[in-house]
Amino acid sequence: MLSNPLMLLLAAVVLFAVGGYAAYLALQLYRRRQRLENGKTELENRLKVKDAEARQSVQIIARALVQKDLSETEAAMRISWLSQQIILSADEAQHFSVFQQLAVATAHIPILDDWAALEKSEKRRLNTEREAIELTFRDFIQASALELVIIRLA
Image (cartoon, rainbow, N blue to C red; front, top):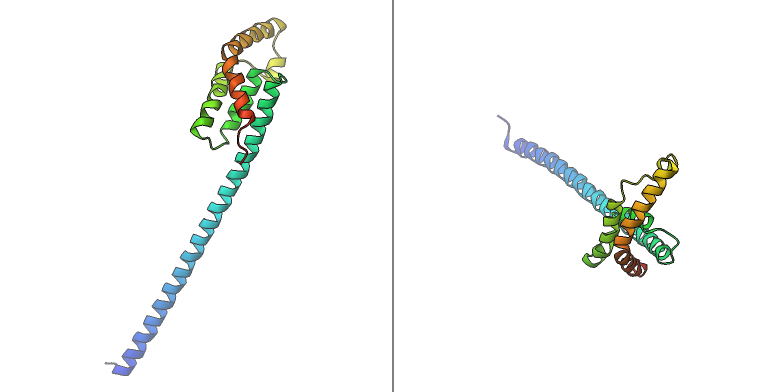
């Protein structure tokens, strides 16, 4: 058998090695938590910036709509898409809702290249349909656009 002082020394070495490994693992865990916290903070900052940019874009589109520089349908499509990038309060969600409803109601109407490929008669028919749909939403859209012009930016 080993002598008592040798056993104590061996136990101390094992204890020191296990303690060192535990300290190493604790340091790794601390670093991982720091990286996660930094990543979370960075993500929150990016979301705030994206939110502010989307809000500013919504204001610009709403202003163009109020000034009749943009059709209700085009504004609805753009604002509806931008609203997905904004963290909305309940009051704000109410103002965005009408734009989302109009965007859904007119989603079947082709845009861009698909629109250009249509025959004139089909364009006229779809324009008439779009204008009729817009007319049913117009008062709500205009009222909401006026509210969105003053949406908080920060």
